[in-house]
Amino acid sequence: MSAPVQEIAELWSAGTAIIYVVTSEEDRAVAICEEAARGFDARASVWSAHRGLEGIAPAAKDPLALVDAVVRAPAPVLAVALDFHHALRDPLVVRKLRDALPALSQDWRCLVVVAPQLELPEGLAGDTAVVRLPLPDDAELAALLDAVQAGLAHPKEPAPVALEVRHRALVAARGLSEGQARRAFTRALRRDPT
Image (tube, rainbow, N blue to C red):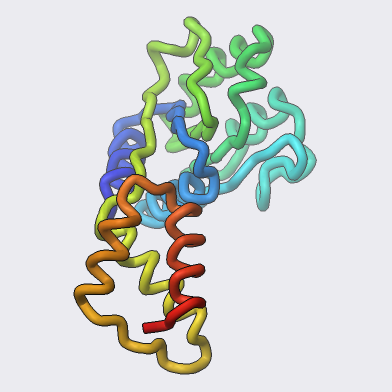
């Protein structure tokens, strides 16, 4: 279990009703939340203003409807809200969330806000855990390189990469986001699979 997955899982299991994940890597944040939910045999459902709350309340495209949907969702549930920081500018949304806090924290329901910047109103600051998603570590980069290599070679067996070359690729990828590293690995492997 990676450190971000463990942190989300620990916060949720401690009864944290709102977790705010600061990152521009939405897909990675969603994957981390889904892995944390699997650890509890729970469901992770993603919300956007365009799609609603997938699998639970697709019609809940409005932020106020999202809060209602999360409160009514079968527990345990981790609702991952994309771009919800915009909705937190609305005092009605903040009030509704504050009213829902007891139901969320007592019943294994959690709202995870995923946004590229922290915009947290004062009224929710004390009840929200803020997690800044770090860049992928060496183990995550190695797994990503393996996945990219296997995906490019499919259905054949991937060409072997010398350990020194692999090490240099992983060192060069430090400091990149997951998406940036995926693109760099893909370009390099397409040029020379070995």
